[in-house]
Length: 366
Image (cartoon, rainbow, N blue to C red; front, side, top):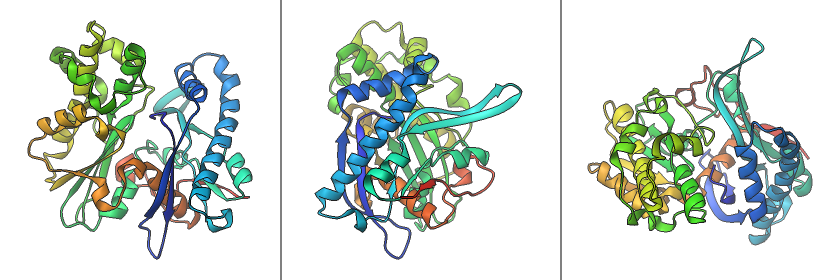
């Protein structure tokens, strides 16, 4: 959901399901491609998208293949050394709530980046389409990160709170004696990046420096916290289709100063995390630490707010557990791809709301 580029992780599996991170790269989107993805997401209701979407699907497949070949070359490997490629794809549409279409109640998600292109260009079997099976099983198709958190921390005697701050923030509660729970909290970097792009002509707020110079409008924050999504009980998922320019217009349009707007939305993005943890987790669970990952942890202003809002929680970077924050999502999909090929059910119904365990992923063979 962040449009940074293609996160590529080289991951090894030994005699268990715990992935071992070997190496990673960020294969950046060309500027014009990045803009086209954003336009396609913003113009979903326009006819032009019907023309652009299939073309973008195949174009992204080509770029994903190049990204995979780049990391293979960097590590002096050959394609025959690679067991599989797992590709989540670029999320274009994620609506886990019901739509009534001609009397049929339908929910849907769409990630693009044609797997047939990836498999053909690399000569490596490719696993993709990880969310659909969970939705068909009654789940929301998200969050999927809890499966990796479960593999890493389900034997922990202490309850772990695992937070990922990407475009959207999500949290997992996991430990030896509990059933894992997880859900999408709300905007992580999504709204911050929108304000940066619109008002500062920047893709993101580096280190949170711009937000640190503005004043927070707490009344706007309180109003935004009353949005129905934050009252909805987990499991739940969301995306940039919900937390978008319209959301900013609804709750923050009366903030005219651009630095104040960014400062307020940065604080709000921290506040929704604290609100979710305090409302849905801390009344029942007593985690001994909060393990953080994702691009949002680089925003020093956001993290400062979060630590002030959760003074009794110990923050730990996921790197401590040999899960590089930068590549955690890529590692997750390596795990999901591996378990798919091995025929292992890899969703967690208590986190997604699915009625049963299923195998996530579709395999495209060479």
